[in-house]
Image 1 (cartoon, rainbow, N blue to C red):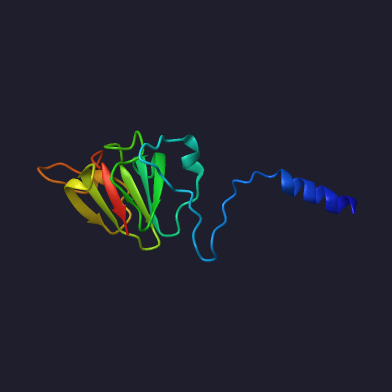
Image 2: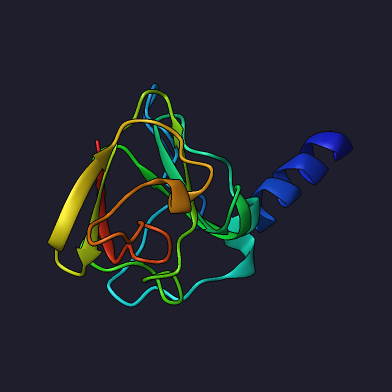
Length: 138
């Protein structure tokens, strides 16, 4: 009886902010508001089952944020606009990257992991390195 009361007391002391996810649905740790500020904890979050992660340094180094398939970011989290150097995809996801905010300024579909965006041509002899300002993952 004493053990049961201890377990019950511990359970009641847990934060009520724990989210419940439907069976088969991926938890949503990668959610961004219109003015998201990067947080160091983002580097420790799990990779999405199907989606992509974006890194500030090639190959897959530096700070990162990830997006699940089906998400669209018309503007990137703070400090990531024009500051992405590699993309890692998961679960067969594809990414459409754009030069400017609001899905404009020239775009390209990326259907694979890209360790270094300096290898991905843009236009006028430029590359996609440090150029992405909005994106869609599907």
